Length: 339
Image: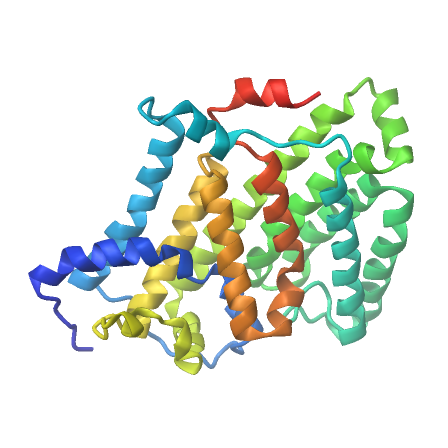
């Protein structure tokens, strides 16, 4: 494939523009297997040219900026506090809403005959068990949120037994860590779980903090895995999706036609990887969470209701993180904010 060269004078312009446009990259289509069947994607390699270098450098700059906002002392404390101070209410209404959304998600899967995700298809011998598992999770949620979390954790680990490894891996972290988060948020939502937590001599507010950490790390690991696996390692499927939906590649609209769809796949893959690392390292702040909300909202508007159904829990998780997550250098503030 012929590689396009970018004049040196435009290199820094691409770096600046692509960093500013990072908020329009699209982890929202991270699960490209929802739209592109296996075996239909082209066998391609990511480009290695000046454009690719500029896009990579610009995206990696996001990591540096995040570190500056959360670590460097020259940033005004008022700004740092506004970006990192957790806002915690005594009534965890967002967590209640997450449980409701999870129930809706499972119910929609049942109505559509799916097991957890569109491309997770159980064999006919196991299909009934898939229905039972999802119905049981919906019913059990009213009795014990923590116990439901344990069931989701076990189900997520079982994906590795019943599906090809890399397909299961695409969903492992999101279901595993949502399940773990439900285990720890349960005492704040359910009396039975609170009684269990109290009998163990544990503090439900401490468990709530742990739940916030778990969904942050889980979302970070999920973006990291999808960015590396579905974009950087196997760019063909993502390229097939962009070729079918070229409006996602916004760079030609910025008068940068040199940035091809394959360059855009690289850009999104590096973006997901960097944002995932920010979440895992607890370097993200409200700017990052707001960007992610804007990204998923944009992809919903572009892709329609199927996208919304698949990402409903992520919207609520991002709102929880936007309010309660804080960041790694706000522990003193956090201790004052949590009861």
